[in-house]
Image (tube, rainbow, N blue to C red; front, side):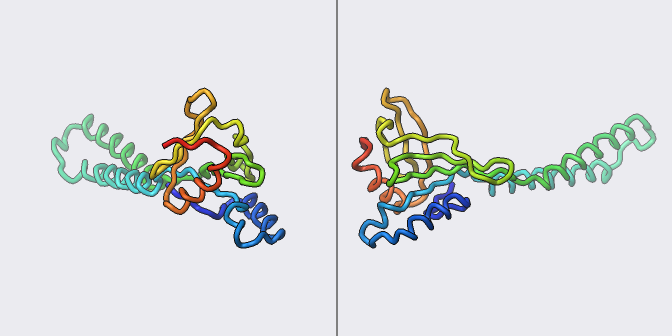
Length: 183
């Protein structure tokens, strides 16, 4: 899971350039810039595991023919051909698997005092899937690895992973006056 203070989306760059065009002073720059967090599963490990499984199925497809037994039985040979072709195709599919989706991003905007969750559509353009004002958030709990935002009734609204203590402290500074912080 990753955190970035710079948005990889065109929206984030436009948003930042709009703030930088206003040239805020150095003292309030940290509070004027939105904090952008991205939700990412650990796709590197998942893809590595899938590729390893694909390699194992490819090796097992050829391994069926390395140790021949009962070569005279045609039904067994036909079954071995079918299983080895299936393993070969399955192994190739698993070896070429990759993640094509963009993970959503959470943007904590101190100027508009709102949380926005953005997700890229099929054309690569960011779309807002959740927009909540800080006033409508019941509370927040900042843990070492994540921030949990709660509804007014106490139910969990969203949990966002944090990857660094710098992002945690920046988020604490942004939310401290607007949202009730829990221990």
